[in-house]
Image (cartoon, rainbow, N blue to C red):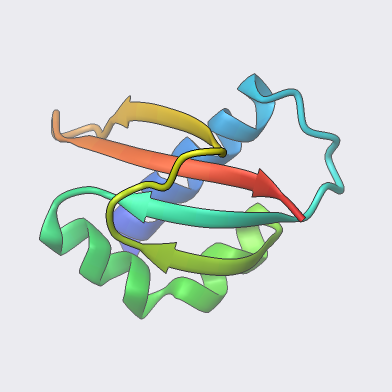
Amino acid sequence: AEGLARDVARLVNEARREARLHISDRISLRIDGPDDVIAACRTHAAWLADQTLAREVTFGPLAEGAWVHEATLPDGRTVRVALRID
């Protein structure tokens, strides 16, 4: 589970760079993906928030109005993250 959370943290930080966020910008983060990835991220949500500067981490289908980034995990599965600057 920790490895999956680390993979997602890398994807979120990649999305932050693509969105051209300032290094200190705080975000709201929403994650959508396979059930085991969501479970791993829930387990490590506090760590994930700390690593990505997220004020909150939520899970499930992505809402409109946020920067959406879709990426592939090393095992080939797709994860989508949505960032919103707080």
